[in-house]
Each structure stands twice: as structure tokens, then as C-alpha cells.
Length: 153
Length: 281
Image 1 (spheres, rainbow over the protein chains, first blue to last red):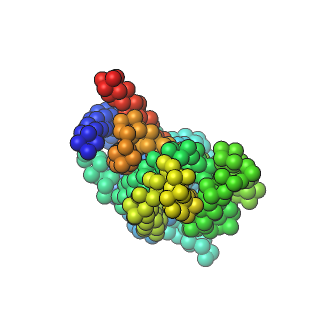
Image 2: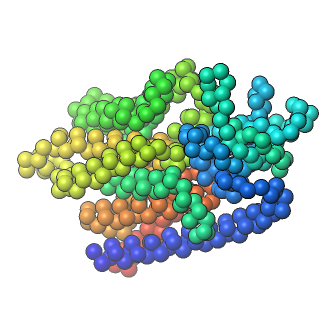
């Protein structure tokens, strides 16, 4: 039994050390990235900033926004992803960590803009921030990021 | 790192993922030792493909909560494979291989013919590799998974002696009056339940890793059934928790991160075991 406890303790120590080392590097890179972006980003108060999360967290949070959207209505969201257009609706598309699944959040760009002249190229990387709201088309309820600020990354 | 982790901890789905991930890892490691010793290491792979086929059927019928139906179909397949094993006309690995590829092919075919969503590739990829499914669990999923995991742990503790007997020498167990068929049936049901639960964590292609790596790593270091089981359980819980945390912080896929950590730690166990054996000699 002593042997088991000794080996388990040794393992725990090795695992913790390896996780700390790995994430220190990640934090440094993330900090640099964040400070660079902070200079460029639009200075608005944001409730949910998806640009500061890891890709796994972003995709999970977007999944939760889509499965329980009413919880997020009225909150300001900032997200980074690919631009996509479909039949007059505009989306920011977010990939998961395996890059096999995508989720799209509809947005409405604040101001007067015409497609395709004013909009970025399809699948180019964009950052969008605005208020998450619900709207009705007929009897169906949909959700989008309204009054959004759009920047090409 | 800690501030980032504390920030992520505020999200309920991170807590759900850790609770379910740790419980599923614990269950899979407990039964993993039995499966490896009974030469059924690949049954996890076979049953996970059956579960994939069952999920495909559930999704084409638009069944939102597919876990109960997937569990029923997977349990039936596990019983067919493990109970009929000795007397069946198609035996052992051939039966597992047949059911495995058959279920995978039929599941993918059904999804292609009656695709419920436009993102077929995404749905299939998500099921096969786990993607972020562990981080998108609903409260019902968490309660259901936690309940089943605790049931598996209780069953294992209650029937530990019998499972031990049936694992090591089935004929001797029968000769001493143990109802080996009954306990094989119990093992089959429990394994099927674990496979379905573990699909959320690592996806159907990576489940075998969750079953075999803890057992094989423990066997490198320990010799008795109890020591191997205890170490495999602790190893599995630690690697799963670490894998989930690393994938959240680094933005890597959850399933493959856990398996990657298990490969590295298995290598460590292998080296430590080899050095220990040389010293003993």
C-alpha cells in the first residue's frame, strides 16, 4: 500500500509540474496577444468577451448561447470568427478545437452598409461586438447580435 | 494561469465537464482492468461504434435526449458479444470486429440518407472525436451521467470479489458455485453503460484509450489485482481532470488531449516499471 501511495504522489507531482510549465507559456502568449488586441479593439464595455477565451471555451460558450439564448438576451458579446452571408443574413462563424464543427451567430452591422461592397470578403476573419437580442419573423423567434461594431482582423 | 482558470471556473459547463469527466474516467478504469485481463481490450471500441449507430438512429428520429435509447442498444450488443462469446458460431474478436464496423457503416449510411442537419461532417466528427461534447452537457446529462457512474462504482464495490474470481479463472469460479454467466452479464451491462457515458468525454474512436491505458499503466508498476485497480482508478481520474483543464486552457480538443496525456504517462510507467524490474533482478 505504501508503494501505491508513493507512486500516486510522484505522479500527481509530475502531472502538476507539466501542466504548470505548459500553461505558463500559454499565458505569456495570451497576454501578448491580448495587449496587442486591446490597442486595436473598440473600447466598449462587454459582458461576454469571447475573444479572450481559448477556442475550446469559445465554442462551448457559443453552444450554450445557442441552447439557452434567453439567458444571454440584453448582454453585450464580442466574438472573433469568420464572416459568412446567407440569403441576406450575416453571420460570424466560430470553429471548435477539432475544426470539424462550426456554429454561427447572426449579427446586424450598425449603420448603413450594402452587401457585398461594404462587407468583408466571405470567410475572412472578423471581430464583432454588439448586444444579443431576440426578434420574431412570423411566429418564429430568432436571436442575433444587434447594433454590432464590425472590424476586420 | 490560475486567474484564467478561476475565470473559466465561473462557467457552469466547466464544472459539469470536470464532474462527469472524473466520474466516467473512474468507472472506465475500474472495469478496464477486468477487460484487459479477460482479453477484451477492443470491446470498448466495438461497443462505441454500436453506440454511434444508435446515436445516428436517434438523431434521424429527432430524439433530442438520445442517451437512454443509445444505452439500451449498446447494452443489448454487449450482452450478445460477451454472453454468447463461448458458444457462438462467430467467436471473440471476429464478432467484435463484425459488430464494430457494421454499426459504424450503418450509422454513417443512415445519417447520409436521412441527414437531420446540414452539418453532417460536423455531427459525425463530433461523435467520433468527442469534440467539445463534454463541455456542452445539459443539467439532465450531468445528473444522468453522475447517477449512472455512481451506480457503476457501487456495483463494482459490491461485487468486487465475484468480478475478481470471474476475471482470473472463470472455470474455477463455476466449479466453486459462482454464477459466472450472471456476473459476465453484469460486466457486459456495466461496460456498455460506461462506453455510452465515455462517448461524451473522448468520442467513440478514442474510448478504448480510456479503458486500456489506466489498466496497462498500473500493470507496469503493480502485480496484485487490488493494487492495479486502485492505481488505475487514481491514474485515470488525474489524467482525465488534467486533460480537461489543459484542453480548456490551451484550446485543444478534449478527447485527444486526455489520450495524449495518457500516452505520455503510460511511457513514464513503462520506464519506471522496467527500471524497477531490473533493480529487483
